Image 1 (cartoon, helix red, strand yellow):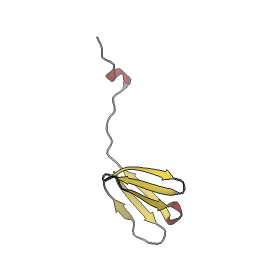
Image 2 (spheres, one colour):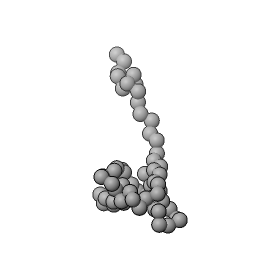
Image 3 (cartoon, one colour):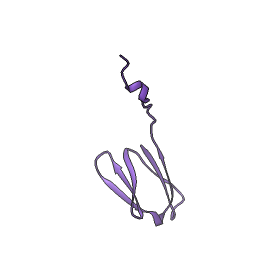
Image 4 (cartoon, one colour):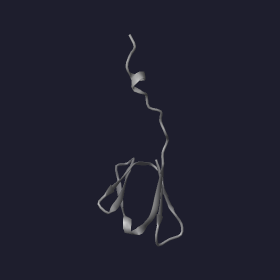
Length: 68
């Protein structure tokens, strides 16, 4: 997943690649990377963030149940 973070103190956004997951931990945005490193960003310093990830088609229940 790719994550774009725009901090309040700069005009240039920061891009992170190789993010497995993002979650809120209290008042911080936490990013979990592929190498098991977690980076925390206090929300007070973030203007906004965007995530972009590949969409995989999931099977519907009728597709998962075998028809005998």
